[in-house]
Length: 203
Image (cartoon, rainbow, N blue to C red; front, side, top):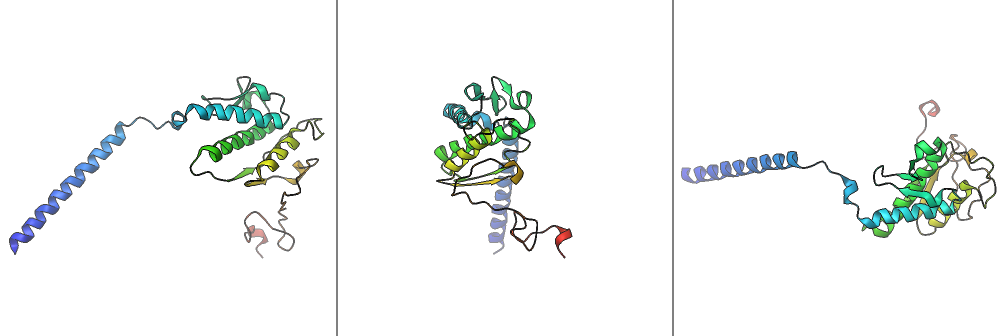
């Protein structure tokens, strides 16, 4: 009986030693790995697709620099004539162009990914955006962006969070569902998270 316990104990010690060796080797392998660079994992068709889709969206949004826009491999962002959006454009244009990049990347995922998201949420795409005198639907970049969003929403869900004062003069598709957050517990929907209120409004 004692020899049986001794054999089992010896086997457990051997397993323990094997596990420790495996863990030591795993730590060593991890420390020797080069830094993970996800940009290098994208194939050539990704950069081609992003360039074409960004230019296509910008054209539909009546953006004057659409044909000289590129998706940079270095900055992993849109550039206009080789300049970053922060250097070339104001803060409002940065928000606008960020939305365009998101839409292009979303389009690529929907077409190429095994796990296509099928929905998109964009927060304040018009934040600080001022296009001056471009007020007609045929030339307005704001109207062009929302027209593009409406077309994309036919086959998927797109949620836009935007201040209503930024939406003046933008024609909306009849299929667009508008939910206004009233911050009033007794009128309309209080906020984005249903049933969640500011502490000052809890009483």
